[in-house]
Structures are given as structure tokens and as C-alpha cells.
Image (cartoon, rainbow, N blue to C red):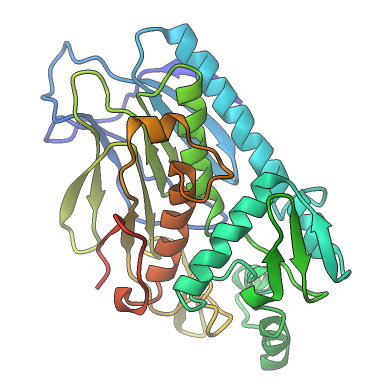
Amino acid sequence: MVDEEARSHDSRCPNGALAMPSIRSSLVRATSLLIAVCIGGCRANDTQREPLYFVHAAMGTKIEVRIDDNDAQRARAAAIAAFERIDALDAAWSDWRPDSELSRFNRSTRIGVFEVSADTSTALAIAIEVAYATEGRFDPTVGPLVALWRLSRASGVLPSPAVLDAARKRVGFRRVECNGLTSLNKLAPDLAIDFGGIAKGLAAAELVVVLAQHGCPRCLVAVAGDLAAGEAPQGSDAWRIDIAWPNGTREEIPLLRQNASTSGDAEQFVEIDGQKYAHIIDPATGLGATTTRQVTVIGARVSSEELSAASITDPHSFIANGARVDAFATALAIAPAHYMELPTGFQVRGAK
């Protein structure tokens, strides 16, 4: 873990924003998103104080935390607590770790009730909710297809129709149920859950809450293409991100106690037999999507009281919204917006 306090050495944007390099995930999602962080409409000058910056590696990507606080020691302690929290989530949900809670669940061929952590049950409950809302265009049970597609991306060879059909028959979000806060009901022996399209958004939001609980509510967290913003920096009305769209245009979006997630295939794809396939699985075909769009989903703004009281087990909290923006962005990258209805207060940018 890197818990050092650091000033950014990146270039300045024309509007005075602090430019960050594109944040890419090697496992789940990569976009041409350029995130620029601005302290509330500030102007570039020599006296502008930049937020404290901390970076960490987890969930197969870079975790970036910016904290606007006068006490560097307090900010560092808060960042360490946040990184310890995301490490715990990663240990529970990573399908690369054979001892993770999710891996043990996926390996078991036993049908019935499984005791799990509240973190896992909550994440799956939200994932199933979004699966219904998107008519399966987001599906947390695509684990068999993800494993198969990793092999195809590495080898450059598509799976045979028989192998692909067998994997597709193992997928279906109606084949698993959540039983309260601490158990799941596995309805098929070969079911395999994958949190790739929801974990990073949930984790980003959870880290903002951890930072707030440790006395640093003025913060911004980036986990690959997923962002979560706490209270605005001092002297500002919001954190601001600058998104570069594939057509060359840019858009500045203010975030205040909100989540945002960007998904698309602008950078990460594989070409097999002359066809480009995105890294995002299309549940309808079982392969990487062949038509995608870059899309950003922005969650509803919550109050300061709601942010400070947020809990991962509350399905209506700021943390749950972080999971939802991630999952809806994954679905909208492969399907038009009119196919699904987003929660109240959510916004979509870039979907056509």
C-alpha cells in the first residue's frame, strides 16, 4: 500500500482544473475517460491549495483518494482506513483469489442456503435489482461467461458454439436469491457470481463514507471509471470532473455527495477474426459486446446527514447508489437508455 501524501505533478486544464491521467482497470473496464478535478470553479493561480492525494492498488486497479483537509496527519489516517476497507472488500469478492467468499460460493455445487457476509449479500441484492431493471442486460451471474471470455481474449480464439452454449446455460440472475443480510440461496449447482460490474462503484462510495467517519468528509474517490464525491472542498460548491467524449467534445460535471460511473470500450477491446469485441460481456450473446457506447451515469445527490449516516446494508443509501451507477453504466454501454428506467434522481450522459 502507498499511503504517502503527494502533490499532483500533472498538467493544468484550461479552466484551472487539475488534470488526472485516464484511470483504467485491467480486469473489468477501460475507457477514454479523462477525469479532471477542480476545486469548485477555481481559477488557476499560485496560491490555490490542492487537495491531499493518496493512491493504493486494489480490485485490479488504482484507487485514488483526494482529501481537502488542513490536517495532513488526519487525512493520512483516514486514507489508510479507507484502503484497509477496500482491501477487505477485494478479499471477499475477487474471483482471482481462491479463498475469497465469492470464489468459495462459486466453486460449491451444493444447492441451498449459504451464509455470507453482509457486504456480499448487500452487493448481490443490488445487482439482482439492477438485473431486473435492465431486463438482464446487467447480470451478476455471468461468471461462467467471464471465465470463458478471458480465455478467448488471451488466445484470440472464440469458444466453440457448444462450449459457449454450455456456459450460457449456467447464467441467470433468477437462479440465486438473497435471504436477508447474511445468506444467499443457490438454486443451481453451477451458478457463478461475478461482481465486476458493480464492485468498484460500491467500493468508491463506501470509501467516501469511511473517510467522512474519520473526519475527512471533503473528499473524492476514484476506482477506475467509478467516482464518489463527498462534501465540496473549502470555498467551493462541488467537486468537478471533466469528461472527454469519443467525438472530441468535453463536458464538466459537478459532483456533490454523488456517485458517477463511466463505461465503454473506447480503449480496451480485442479483435478476433476481423471483429472487434469489447471487454464488457453481452449476456445476450455470451461474448464481448460488438456494439458499445461510452456512457456516464450520475447518481442522485444525498444530504449531508444521509452521507454521514450511510451504511452498506441500507439499500437506499449513498453507498447503494454507488453500486447502482456502476451496474447501470455497464448495462447502458451495450443497450439504449430507453430499455431501462433508472432510479429517481439518476442522470445519463452520453448514451444515444
